[in-house]
Image 1 (cartoon, helix red, strand yellow):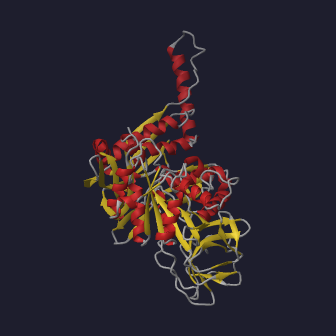
Image 2 (image 1 turned 90 degrees about the horizontal axis):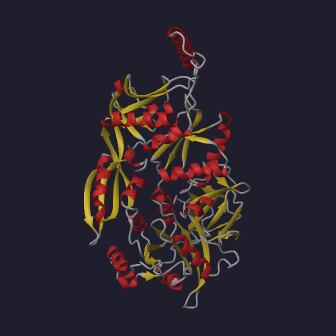
Length: 596
């Protein structure tokens, strides 16, 4: 165990984690040059296209250090986007050290700090690294002082590397071997193996990525999962090199995988602990389940595809433990699922994966957040879709989730950011100058105002220089009302929104205008209305497609023309009573951009 080092790489999105992992694999000879490709540990197409790590990946490397000893180094590559902070926290639980990577031109950003605090909470040894020193506008001296202040360390101890050019890779490995403590565990104690990630294999079932804290496991060990009490015999045990390599056993301190044979993620949950079913051992502490923040309805375009959508979501959940879903029905869209996401980026990824990997044609409803409704009898219920909002006569108050957000920005963009946050009902908490040019702004903001396009608007207002981190603060009572959308007099439950009363009229008017633009014209007039209860607060009308019935009336008496027009009007009225309006996916997407 003295020769083992377990560490992960944490950073803000796009600061070079995956590129550094590639160089480490090359330098240690884990992957031959023939097999090497950029972003080797990012296995999904979406990860490669977007240049963003979405899922943890682990790899074992063997490294001969300057002291002549051969070390087994286990690396876990983590995501950098704020939506996947949960994935990062799980990976940190499986390590003893962390490389904190900072871009030499961008400096410390919001997610750098957020991930650093997670690592310090997990008592990891932090090795600061400045990456991209080969860039023409790199500021390594300035940024090493910034990091040193943050960690209370000496600026000279901050490593300077270029992962792209392969500069300083050996120094990184030497520091890992020297500074990261070896795992502390008892090889003879009862088995405790933490599942920090998992994926699904059609032949081997759910494969758990595990870190062995105490004891050892081999093919003869009968295993039990602490939380679900499911008992199983391992089908395969091995390590990542980075391909799965069968070893048949894992010892205390090692990172590897155990194939369970389970066909459902319900038995084998990420964060659970595998123990020997013959011996008593406690679950490993420090695990928290993921908490979805954004909810949306997903419906198949063809109702016959409902079972296929359920299968697709089941399989996605096997590879993404933070995804939650339950069946729901809508009068307009039929049978579908209410799905919980960590944030809007997570929702976008799931939508793309459903369409690409499972060839599903789906409709996503507008995202909403989870509210708390306090009833007159004192009960508190959770409301994550507008149609579940209780009757106003039974309601004492509605509470909405508020977030604490931190924005890092150059000082010249303070004005546009303040304007954006104030427009979204935000409250200023603090403003702190990090240096002569950069400011950290802290605000409180309702989550419902943040989930739609707050991030995009902030990036546009600051020319891409600002970075954002957020955390859940708590629920707060607000004057919230249910706004219904009626199309052709029929309420569409999947388009309802819970909004603040002060903004209901402006949002209703904008919504009606947006929907009018995307709904195709029918043979009859289609009224689009926004209503609170029985009160209509906005209306737009989609005009009917009309045949020119007067084309054959050249000159002649007006009464003849009027008779034809009246006949047409009667026909349109009859059509309107019988006709149904097809709602395109664009109408649901239009609700995401309710900005003037």
